[in-house]
Image 1 (cartoon, helix red, strand yellow):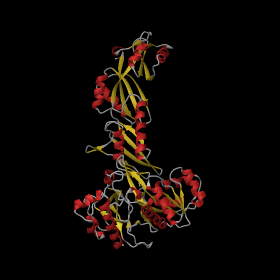
Image 2 (tube, one colour):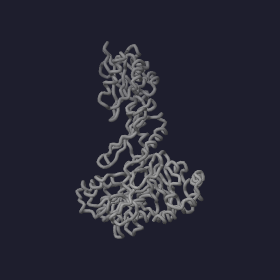
Image 3 (cartoon, one colour):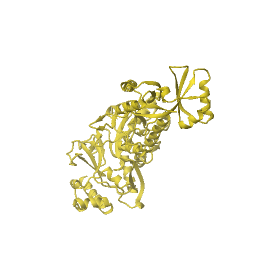
Image 4 (cartoon, helix red, strand yellow):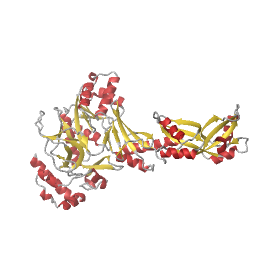
Length: 418
Length: 141
């Protein structure tokens, strides 16, 4: 594996140097030539790539292939108004399908299973990622997409879905709805679920497993690297195997950039070594995790990562959607409501996350008329919906109502117990 | 005559009203009339006081969101039909009333009606010459 990785890494760095100005400039600056990269250990000679770099080169600046070779783009939310755009060649799509197919296999999926995909289809990588994986495996994919829980349950029951793919919170929601409809796990044919795109606890896993009568597997991925299937859980359920023939992981100290030894906790960094369209070098995921090479009872020898246990930035994941406080700030600023102070309050009601944006009233927003103030609230709500892709409640509060520590307002109150 | 009304943003929280009216009292300002418009999250407290500018300052010093709003005040006889007459004049003139509230005066048999319209001058022009008594600061404060 190390030899394969070294060879692929070298090839990738060559391609980056030749085709991506951003990387050529960076490597020249560091005095590193592609031929200096001959082993996996040489990784640390390479520069990091940040989400900000994707934003600075928006939309296609880091792509390494001409447009004719691209076959698809996908996008995720960026740290501010702009999205992060990623691209794929035909080979990338095929590789990704293999990654996702491996994940489905690890969750016990076979050719004869019905794979029920309730991740959103669209720019978000969740839906299409699992979809192609299921087809690659030769299973039967049911492309339900997200929403309409009643219909989800009808399909689960009538179509005989065997594996459910969605966010863990939506799985809980479906499980509860099934109970409310007076159905039991015996009425459906599910045997497993593949849940990802947001953090979830082991308690939640046990609850979902009990309520749906299934085994619940974690699946990890991010669009910048590929999409769902970068890593996946196996029957042992003690971490996720990384498809390290395609993505080399590192754990670093987020402050110093120093590479940490196996087993230590730090920021997860990935280098793509087979990607053609967007081969990112040492991409900072901002997820905090550990790596392990302990022998796995499933027989796979791929390195394992722990469930991410936090972030090194202020990104929130709400109903599977990435939300940065800075996005909300730019929405409010765009509405010309002076520079309002705001706070995000996230709750878990039942099993769905809710976001409330509390905004301190400014003289610009105030009026003696209720109608006028409610209009302002509505304007904020619809602007937030279109930017975040997430329905948020807006609550206007009095000036200085948001607590401040050392002059800085506390931006996030996360009351979810994950 | 245009009258100044204090408009105060009040979050729906226990004790908030006591705090705001306390500040007004401490500033030695007397409240003549009040009304509250409320939603599930917040309310707007509307006050007619004897010294609006002083109350405004005191509230602002305490970081309370407050503004002065121009409203019309009319004095009407405290008898059936008197109020309807005022509203009819406004509607005949095509003026829509954003909100209104009324209180009984201490002297003579009068009721005071406070009206908020988009253009107070237009409202006053409509009422003038219709036998409606428009009030000025001195009448109320």
